[in-house]
Image (cartoon, rainbow, N blue to C red; front, side, top):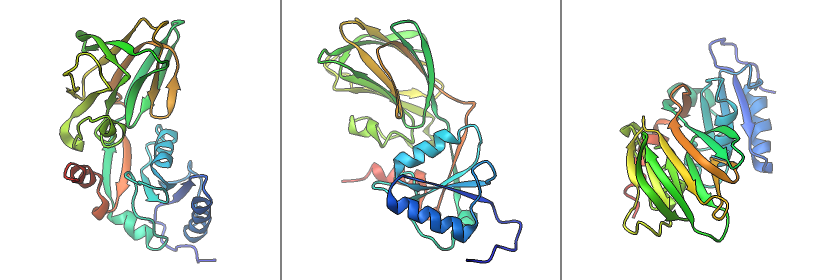
Amino acid sequence: MAARPSSSSLPRLAFVSAATPTAREAKARLEKRYHGVTTAEADIVVALGGDGLMLQALHRNMRRSKPIYGMNLGTVGFLLNTFKETGLHQRLEKARQVTLNPLRMIAVNGRGQSTEVTAINEVSLLRSSRQTARIAVAVDGKERLPELHCDGVLVATPAGSTAYNLSAHGPILPLGAGLLALTPINAFRPRRWRGALLSRTSQVEFTILEPSKRPVAAAADSVEIANVSKVTVTEATDIRLTLLFDPEHDLEERILKEQFVP
């Protein structure tokens, strides 16, 4: 067993992992090497897995305000650093901090019940039947689209703009742009509407038209609310999430690079 570090200045580390054998085995080795503690006791949380695991770790630690450093043992790993077992304390000391504000979704279902959920990447609305969804879109209390015919529509943060938003042909947003992306998913009418860039302070309200005939579900990252009638999306300015990145894997640089991928 490795000797316990003598310096009390080293941050206490908690390790969380995806359910894959590779991630679990790495977690066990790292806990032994760095004397892992519980999440409640930790100064920094180290997430081992893919982007899905990183999102889970961010959601679970949302109110603890503890920095999260991810190491990629998944596939894409856009929100994570390269996996390496040695030199972790040195990497953490050199790491750059990136602060994110998630989105707050308030979804009202057909029975009038309201549910509040946060989303780090995006809030998306998707049709739940073969019928095309019909959705009215208002921004800051002013109706901008009286009737959007579509498969769905989403609001993405800069951190999430390279995920589902990009696959729906939405714009990539630099972290410091102060913007949100409002992006339709397979819009049929208006035919030429391709979405909008909104201030991060905007309040976006979606009203589902004919919800009984054309049911729509709303999702905040991985949490889905079925049969919604109205959805309001704002930035959760009271929640600040801190991610740590190696200088060569800085999130801001990754987002910039995505705009030049051939």
